Length: 188
Image 1 (cartoon, rainbow, N blue to C red):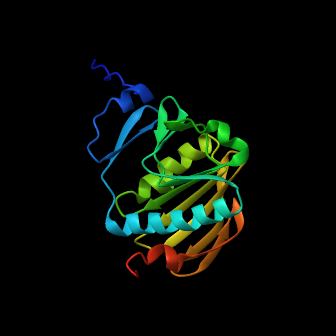
Image 2: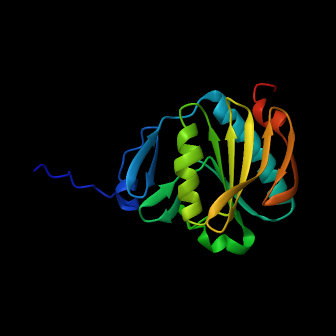
Image 3: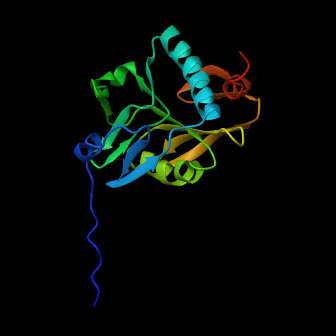
């Protein structure tokens, strides 16, 4: 009878020992996930959304916005690098010098064709399991915005928008975001 190969569970310590090669390394319940560096449309949209969120958060002294690469330790075997994340002032104790330890108030992932399945399924379940209250998913190729809120351990989509619509979503209900400003990174 053939035996099953033993599953290797990696930890954060294993992760930080990987040499920097411009790839994004994450751990999903101890399994290594590798994502290539993002393209220009992805980076442009991340920068635009980061500017909008950071401006709002600073103006209202709400907390802190971070962009990838920045490790979020959901547990010692689940380490992610969301494109953007927000930690409220009240929860600033989870911000450590080299990483976030615990669930941010908001995690934002910008998907493309190569990452859509992981963002919509795998990361969505991982973030829910670890108590991330708000999860925004933006699909750059489809020009789609979805905001999920965690309720009873599962996400419920509370906002879905497309193309150049205006959106407001938790945890920032008073922030109106023009998706046109997010997608249009080339208009400078």
